[in-house]
Structure formats: C-alpha cells, structure tokens
Length: 397
Image (cartoon, rainbow, N blue to C red; front, side, top):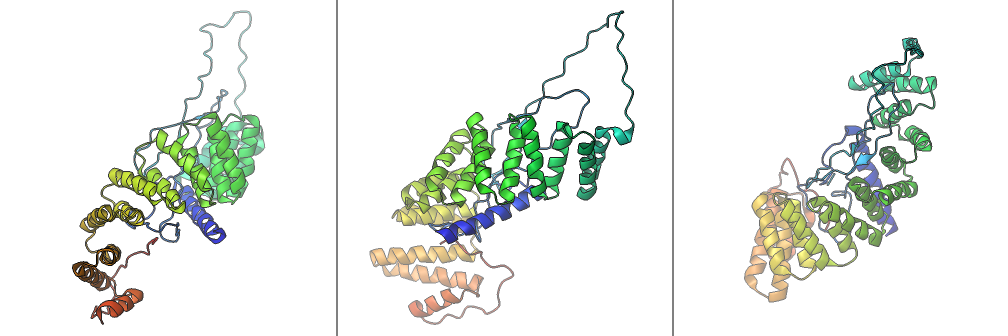
C-alpha cells in the first residue's frame, strides 16, 4: 500500500506540473481518455486520476482605487473532462466598486491634485510591464518586473498578486508559496489566493498543508467544486479512501454531470473491494461519456469483478464498436470470454476467446505473454512479427 501511495503522489505531481504550466489544459477530466483503467487498484503509470484543478487565477490589473480581494465563485462544471471532464477556471466575483465621488466639491475645500508618479516609482508601471512580458512568453522578465513592483510597495496586495501568479506561470512554486502567505496575511478571506496556494503547495509536495488549505476553503464555501475535487484527489492519492469517498460524493452532488468524478469515485470503490458500487459509478461515467473507450472498458472490468457477466459483455462490445482495431480491447474481450467458458464450459466461448486474442496479437505482435498463453491454450500462432506504429497502453488490470 505504501508503494502504491508513493506512486500515486508522483503521478499527481506530474499531472499538476503539466496543467499549471500549460495554463489550464482542459483535460483535466480524463487522463488518457482512450485508454481503459481497469484494475481494482490504481496503476497510475498509464491511467492516473489526474487532478482536475485549474491554473492559478489571474487577478485583475492593478487600479489606483482600493479593490476588495476577489473571491472565487463556483461555476457549473461540464461533464469532462480531460481535469478528468473539462473543468473551467473559478471565476472571481466582481470586486466591490469604489465609492463614487460627489458631483461637485465644496468650494471651501478644493481637492488637491496628487502629482503623477514617475514610471520608475509607480508599481503599476512594473505590473503592466510584467504582464506584457508574460504575453511575450518571457516569464523571467515578467518576474523581475513583478518583484520590482513589490519592492516599491511590499504591502500592496495587487503587486503581490501579480508576482505570485507570475511565479507559478514560471513553475517557481516554492517562491510563490510565501507570496500567497503574505496575501492571506493581509486578507485571510481571499479564497482565490488560498486555492492557488494549495495548488503550489501540492507542487512542492507539502500535501498535508495543501489538504489543510483546501479544507479551509470548503468549510467556508462547500460549493467550491474545484477545491472539493482536488481535495478528493489528494485523499485518494494518499490512500485515505473513506475521506476520498465522502469528498467525491460531495463533488457529484455539486456537479452530477462531471463524468470524471463518477469514474474516480468508482476507482475508490474498487480499492475498497466494492465492485458492485464501482460498477454503478462506472456505468454513470459511461452514460455521460458514451464515446470514450475507457468508459466502457472500466464498466466491463467492474461488472466482471461483481459477477455481472452479461453487463460486462455488453460493455466490452460497446468498447469494441468504438475501437475495433484496439489490441487492448481485443485482449480484454478474450479474457472475459475465457472466464465465461470456465464458468459455463461452453466450447464456443473458448474458441471466441482464442480468436479475440489472435486478433489482439495481430494488432500488437509485441505481446510476449499473450503469445505464450495462446501457445499453451491453442498451439503456436503465426502472428506477424512487424510491430504496428502504435501499441495499446498497459491496462489497470
């Protein structure tokens, strides 16, 4: 179990690295969407439950009037998506508009006009320069500009926000953590900054504190779906299965059409040795994502574990319809037919299993173990020796 947990943590980190750097790639929901995930334990090397988080939220440009720190607003989630299901960025709530000035000023107290700051003394000048550098894909220059803005006014939240987001965009997560801490020290209710802090903490492997920050978020706003999702992923990756189960159920309550949440809850049930519950969750994921091979392969595996062979056959046939030239689909079909043959002792099922395996070996001749299995069951096979340009990914079963 300890090895499995460590393995998951590495994959969670790899997933976050891709998504934080790419600027909210929308996979978020389904990792390797066309590959099945079918083992009762998560074998993250091929199909990892990737955290469906978003990249740090970009704060609004600095203005001269004080601005209330934006708080993230839970948004409806479309059925992924490949965060796992597509997940959109949390939308900050509009900042409170500054109070309007009176139409006329009292004649006895004319307003004194403040002298304009020189560019080298104006934090806004360096924030704007940093934004332009980011737009040119020059994060190093952007960071220098943002650091300069903070040096001019270390207590100015807008400067700290610009620096923190720029550091994360440059993948300098360890530097971003204390900046987010400073922001939260000034405004502990800034949910957006806390969410981004949790992302950075995950990237620097401080999982305990990342969980703490996510819990603070959901205690204040249980409808913050992204925070609930990422918290569930952290629980699952560390083997806290009951905590993960409860949190996935909350995610599904908030976003019932998020296919990846149903799929990942099913994986938790598989790890808990509850294949019947997993089968139901995989079935819902397949209903929401009917065009993905992995949806049906997962359902077939869970149904087979639950002893529902009829449902398993229906699911594997749906997968075959979607990907008839997928060697892995044919391999799994052969496994299921062999198991049915052993249960019913019908010779035609064994013949069909052998045919499916031969087709799989023809599509991917590199399957040495399958070749040996066929040799034991049906005699030598004459599958071609030239490997195809692509080969099926390893499965979770």
